[in-house]
Image (tube, rainbow, N blue to C red):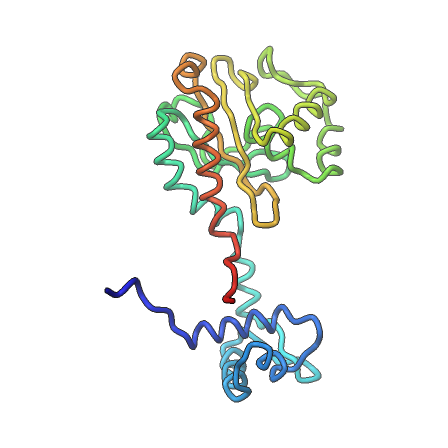
Length: 257
C-alpha cells in the first residue's frame, strides 16, 4: 500500500545544495560543494543557474554565490515565535477542553508579555486578550521568560524594580524576584499564586527552541476553587507535553546516514 506522497528527489537535491552553499564558510567553489554532496558537477551548475535566475542566489566575485534578494526577503518573513504559535494553537485548544480551564501562550517583547493564544473555559472572564501586553514580573508566563533571559538582560530588568503590587501576593522586591526566577530555572516551571488577580492561580512552562532558548511559554489558569480538581502535577504534565509538541516543528531532523 502506498504510504503518503513521495518526495521530489530533484527538489530535495536542489534544497540540499542551497543549504550547503549558504552554510559554506571555507570559500569553496560550487563544484567542490557538489562533490561533498555527491552531486554531479553538471547537475550542480544547472541547479545554481536556476537559483540565480530566480534570484534566490547571486553570483559574487571570485566565482562564489551568495544569498539573493528573494531569499533575503523570505528570511524577513520567518519568525520562530510565529511558527510556535501556529503549531501550538490546535494543541492548546484541545488541552483547554481536556483540562476545563483557561490556557494561554505568550512571548516576551520589550520586557512585556505579549499574549498570542487564549483559549478555554472562562476565557472571556479573564481580562487578558490576544495581542495584549502585560508586565512580566507578576505572571506565570512572564516569570518563565524572564528566568530564561541571559543573565545581563535579566539583571537589567530587575534593576527597574521595585515593582507595583497588583495584589497582596505580588512579588515587588527585585531581590525576592531574583530568587523566584532562580527557582523557576531550577524547577522548569513558574507559578502565579494570585499575584496578578485575587482568586486566580496559574502554572506555566517554557517552549524551547532547538538551541535551548525559551521562545514562548504556555500557562493554565484556574480559580482557587478549581485547583482541588486540577492539581499542579496533572496540569504541568499536560503543559509540558503540549510545549514539547509546539516546539517540535523547529527541530532539525537528523540527516541520512
